[in-house]
Length: 66
Length: 423
Image (tube, rainbow over all chains, first blue to last red):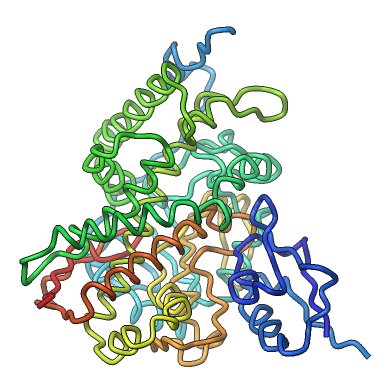
């Protein structure tokens, strides 16, 4: 599983780095950024889904990799 | 170094070549039909706007008024979101619905950038502010905010009934924003007056509104001069020294942004803290659950923000157009109700209920799109700390007299009198 943020849509609400601080961080202007490669470690799947489901701008995608 | 003379001549004097805005007739009094005559300044709305919004969403989802020179009130989430995202057809050059429309030439900057700005100017004006308001930056103010909350509670010792809006909630954002702007902390009472003048005095005669705005701007210009004489590490000095496109900011930009930070930083968070305490005072099961499990507070807080979203914005229609079933005219107002969007059953399960463990909560309390509240991280920090400290120090409290609670009229809604029995 992998997460990604659309920088076109992100407005810096920060729900992702509030709810899933192991997967997302903020940049110098408060926009969300994916930490590392975005691969969700085992046990963090719920955090990934919560972050995506709570983003007001629908800027986060959770991708299921084959 | 050259003397900064931007603020020495009176930059606020209108020049003869500047276009004037347009005034509309002031219409007050009871609303005849909320679908065709709405007014967010009437007592029925400020007392409880949600049944009105729920009714409109069913029967007239984009309501109309001839007051304020004409305007529209969308109540569905999808319409509110569409307008927030559509900066091509809707302008932010005025964001407080009133009886005065500033001239179109004021766009794209507006009177209080960046909230009053349209693209492309908006992006760069906003970028100037963002670093000061990230979650990481505002976290540094958490210890001082917590200490302030404790000192406010200490001052309530020995009393049975306290006004939590007056003696607690209002002081928290006032002090935090005064510190950030570098204004004297004892000026708090002035700030309250400024906030009420800008946001609640909408239907006063124009001369009175202008006189009151002048008092705000006189105060801000005096603060600018104090900072020019004694530069210090705060947002006022930062704005005085900031550059945009290789030039110092226009003096009206500096003072307009200071006005925005002062006004928007206070009333909103004051309202969110007060509405949350109001809910907990009248809902013992939620209060007891949060006292027993403070880890739930961050989730509960988002639900308070959804259900009691304090902020409604406004836009002006740019050109005549047919939009989602209604005929909008150029310069019609849009009352952009994030509170109404947040209670749309098409967007939220159990939209009319307060569910403090709601895990999926894609609310729009801080707006949507490019104008997302620049202070949202600061507001969330203040709200969380204010509620944590209150619940820790005063776990038992209730409404002393529900009929004595009063709510602010206008676009920022929250309790202004909140008598709580605390023992």
